[in-house]
Length: 299
Image (cartoon, rainbow, N blue to C red; front, side, top):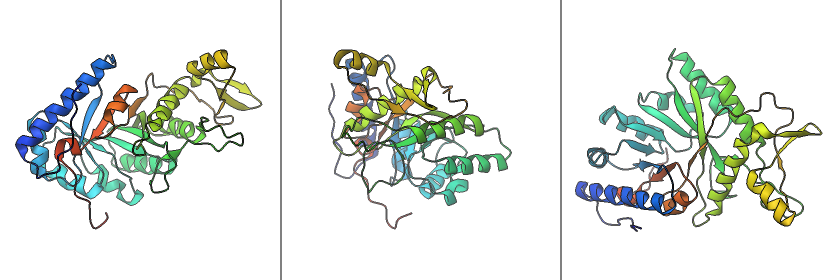
């Protein structure tokens, strides 16, 4: 399996072409190693990188690019080919929604974290009178890092000290809102930014996906819905241990229509672990474009 490291020296267009080839080969090797039928989509994260470097990756065949900052994405999109699929992967402020949606080839937003944000995006799209559909993922906070901005909280503090419990009330409510109220937004999956070196964040996202996909199998108890994944049922049979997941009380139409939930997880230093756990989208920047320059002033 190919192992590659980020460049720490000045990057050139030829180096980007080679880096991209190395990353794609590594993704292919990992996918074969873990016997995945379909390998994940590479999103080349180009934040703080110049247009000429993005063009180098584009000329090498890359079409999916990710940006963290609205103003940077808007400016770059004006100078780059229209057949690029842009992924917005940064924290989205409400006052920048209209600016973000001005990018005609914006295809994905990975960081939906509230009904309020989804509602404002939907209203902005409706005001344009467009049939445009943007694919969206819900950002999930899988680690309790106080420095992280955004993401729906799923960790539950249990008196018995069990840290494996996952509270998905907000997630399920947000999915239902996207499905039922946002005709211009297509819910396709979940996204997380892991705590460096903590691959349990990926495990939580995978488990959350399993639970959500089993929601049609819920059973009602005292007007509260509980759900057990197949893995949890097997675990209970083996060691008589069960983790019950509280869902949302009396939520109408709590059936997730998606037949699959995609997972956006894994970056330059963790993508191989993410592939191992079934990632669908990988957000890789420094392995392709070299170490990024920190943005200043803050957007």
